[in-house]
Image (tube, rainbow, N blue to C red):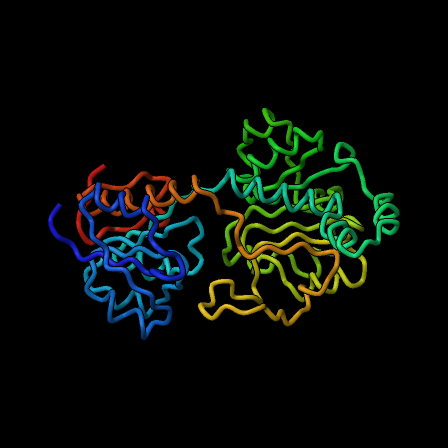
Amino acid sequence: MQPYRVIRLNAMLGPVSDFEADQYRQHGLAPVQVEANTPEEIIPHVKDCDALFVVSTALRAPVIESLARCRVISRMGMGTDKIDIETATARGILVTNVPTFCVEEQADHTMALLLSLARQIPFMSRAMHAGTFHAAHLATRNNRRLSTVTLGLVGFGGSAKATARRAAGFGMKVLATRLHMRPADPEAEALGVQMVDLDTLLAQSDYVSLHLPLTKQSYHLFDDATLRKMKPGAYLINTSRGAIVDETALVAALREGRLGGAGIDTYEGINIFDPNEAPPVHPLVLLEMDNVVLTPHVAAGSLQAGQDVGRGAVENVAAVLNGRWPPLENIVNPEVVPRFPLVR
């Protein structure tokens, strides 16, 4: 492969692992590692690059418009809501991701949050440390056997299907909905999942888990009106994107007792990727609520997921720089007309 200028952003927030470094060596790439998070910081480093790797930094229009010869932006993950896809497409730049790298981990984390809520684990842990054993025993009277409850999956892609497999092991009834209900998904029947419309799912589900990308259509999909359609006392679990949920409306639903609780891994009001780490102060007091289980955007994390995303992201770039299309499922903007011709 001829020498190309390749930039790898988030060198500090998402440092290169030994496995990722080995992938670069295997494909003859030597990315320049950069930590920059604003357009003013990013542009001087990337304006003359041929390929650009990004973990979590936003790539808005000014950055992409500065890319004079870039062929491919490789998102080292799944979500691409921080990348201006439209501008990249207009400039002939492929945007790629690794859409399946953490479906198992996201499903595991969804079930971990669900079980924490169902068994009141945070409360029980506090009771153990405080020695308030009687209160803990009384609280278990409100627990429900998982084989008697219904899980609703909003979105029915890879992570939702993996969650459905796990839920089946607990004997849970599983409902699911998706944007396009036709044609029928044969995996739904195989997994014992009943496909229903969103309103039906909300009315019948004891736990509602989100498995959606953040788009213009899904932004604040779970607003006050949607949350009011949920079954009284139900729980909301979000391991997808924070802004799918209107957090103001969620706090109101929790405070008023309309919802039983929530398990949240992603946020609109907390910047998990802020380089200046400090205890978060959420403007909507989510952190102070006893019926909420919170984790810091870690649902995707595992050794295997890290290896999958490193391998996939590097292979996407290597394909483009070698004049080939990456796998179709890894191309975010398949309608793009590349700056340089690619072959299948």
